[in-house]
Image (cartoon, rainbow, N blue to C red; front, side, top):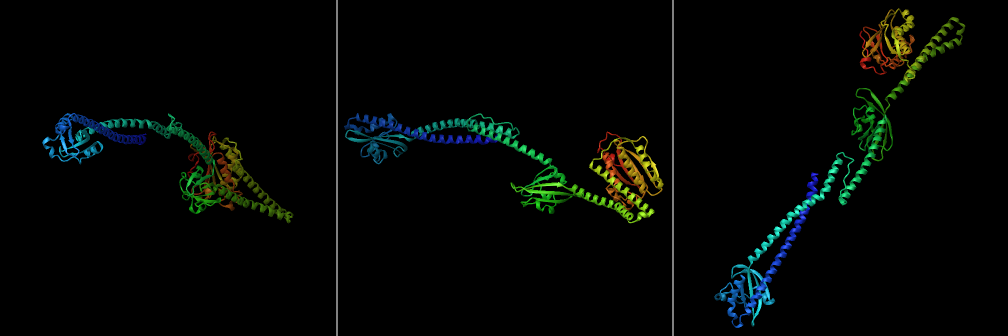
Length: 607
């Protein structure tokens, strides 16, 4: 508002003041000229009246003695009129002068060349303003031709010029005083007029300031029907249209944001210079960024050698490809990129999809097919060879036939176990295997496991130690719990040399969790195999595992079963040799799947 007050109001005030000043100056000049001219006309009329009066007085004197009475008449009229009176004959000689004595008239120079005299002789009357050499002062002269008897005599009046100048000065002072008073009044009225003229504008500025300050619902008040009122109405119309447009833009923006944020793939928009102008939140996750990449160039976040088709100038064709992104913490990501050029701003729309897991699953699938094929090839080959041998005549030899049939039976059992484990693992990975979670006695489940493995322990003379308390209850699926213990305890017995020791013990963890530990004093497992040990078909010693009847799927099944019951599973080395497999289970049903924390579910073995 201050800027408006200093700007428009002051400008209007100055404009009004300049116009008024110029008008008053011009008017004052014209009035002065008019009054001066009017005053001079009045003076001339007054002087002419005096001259005619002198003419009448002169005509009262007899013509015969008039020439002798000119000096006295001039003296008497000069005293009466308080002016210099001069009588000049037609030849230009002064015959009477109120300012010159009679004795000195002969010394006065001829006045025929005087302008007023010449004008009077030619036009009856004449005027002139000049310095008088006789009286040594500036005078205003007016001459008049009078016919006195037979002679033409010029009667001249002279009035001091300083009197006229004083009158004109007084007139000018009066005019200037009037103009000054009028100027002050005009300045005041100009200020009031400029203030009143800008009052509506100041109100509009205040209201627009409120609108720009955040009061979007406010509108300008239309207080008049003039141009300013029309401007306010137009401004309100623009505001309404703008509000509708902003609402439409906000709605489209929210829709676009909702769509972009609902897309699990990363979406980016690039301008014609390769700068990112739009990106959804998925881009941060796909590219493993810490913050939004908006306002950055694509080369800053992706390897330069892998974005050749994504930097300006863009191709008119759709780009499709994959890039490999190296992560700072190690590892890499495979990202599928689809880029579509935009015709409106010559930019680029990029769709990014993290296909790392898909590539991993494809590789896992290939590895699984290769591993399953390899595992199935041996028993199938043995069954086929033994069957061919029997068909070739071995059936006639009783002992050989029995040996071959027993081999076929063992391999069929191995195939049945392998196929059963594959089906179990498939159900676990697909989520179709449903668990019946309930409170289970760990001691009873372990007892059933011991009964099933008793012959194996007895054949190898294993020292088996059970430290599970009788009263220990866990929240688990009984069948799954038994299968976990059977796998882990069975593996410990299998890979522990004769006369070795297998110990099953338990440890209470924080947060109502319990850790089961199956420890042996066998040869142990090198640490480089620990991260891969729970993968499908992974074996530390493949030949030895197959000899002991293993399928390579037991630990993978154990891992899935434990995680399905919200637990964790792992392996620790035991000094000087041996290993300890452990897994955790909750003690109560109030614990939900995945609720175990790192502190609660991580077991550290004390050797």
